[in-house]
Image 1 (cartoon, rainbow, N blue to C red):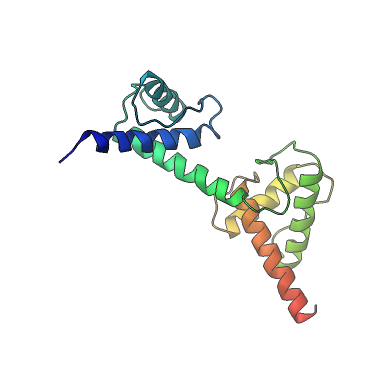
Image 2: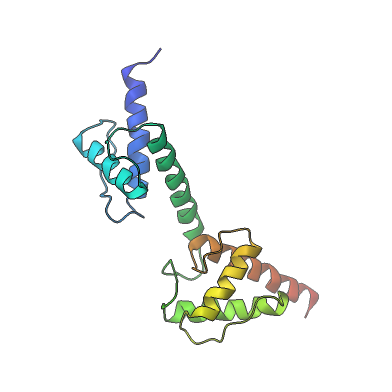
Length: 175
């Protein structure tokens, strides 16, 4: 049997997903989770539908819910990857980025390239150019991630895990 509390919980779940997505979709405002499918919630659904390239109806049909859930799961995974990173990175890092985060990335890739001979070490310049993007793309392929050449939180987490494991192994073997 379906009752009002079931609907309220479903709307709360929807609003929770939209609230999380407001962190990664700039045009989506953040609103309180109250379990009421108000005009505000409808408007947020329409903004998401436009963002996702879906028909802008304000109704949460199966396609809209699947898209919301997929993007929500990705956003939560990225947020979890960002937790506890030893160095704050301004994700994403892509062509044209500059500064200390790029220098750190290039240094770490340089060390990994000693292990993975097919990954060329980018010159440590502090500028995210084509060589850095290429190396990041090759590492993404190695880790089974989409090969974008752009450093996101998940790619950085995998690179750091790999780097840390290799560093620990070197210390253990006294290399």
